Length: 128
Image (cartoon, rainbow, N blue to C red; front, side, top):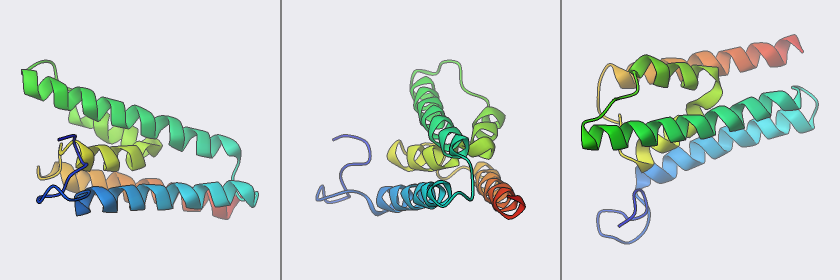
């Protein structure tokens, strides 16, 4: 069974994975709309796309390291990439890979990075 593809009964995606994809995709759709309406520059979308991909890859590498008891990515690094725009990719990775989904205070800090990033985007839109 591939990560994030089968529910408990093996019939479809897990609800948490679907919610993560919907949230990340919905947010990125908003950013695309902001670009298309001229409210933000294209580079903003590029930052979100690039950092989201990097976040997903970092979470995947950290999960693999945890399994083999190897060198782990510091949590501060995972939070930093989420803060600068990688949170959509981090959100999907957390649920698809089942990594860092239950550990506190990681979850609280993660959601704080999401709020701060969204506030920064709102400020950028309002200032533009």
